[in-house]
View 1 (cartoon, one colour):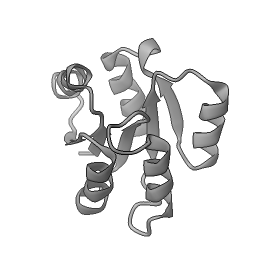
View 2 (cartoon, rainbow, N blue to C red; view 1 turned 45 degrees about the horizontal axis):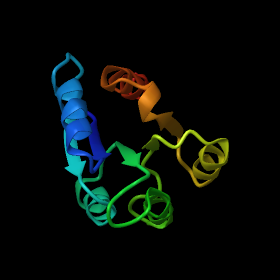
View 3 (tube, rainbow, N blue to C red; view 1 turned 180 degrees about the horizontal axis):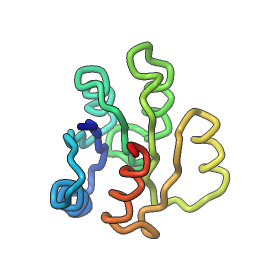
View 4 (cartoon, helix red, strand yellow; view 1 turned 90 degrees about the vertical axis):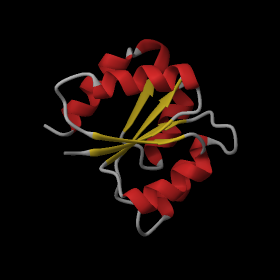
Length: 123
């Protein structure tokens, strides 16, 4: 059963993602981080199979979190899907060049479609 670390600070969105991930037939363990510092700590302690990383976080920029994760000995090989509402090609290229596997636009992606993206990763 895959372990997913979801890094999201918006409570309403977080609850919608939680319901989408836990309500279906796809079995996974969902770990939540509400900010960048917590994401870095949980990435090391929980050793997730995938990280879903928001770019806009209350304490640090998601790009900085991505950089630290990819520089970390224990976390550099964890796949990361970036979740954001910033629909800019430059940012998409930047995070992919830093090692993000996918760049997903929240406003174009329902929670159930996000679950499908994650399912595809573990097929």
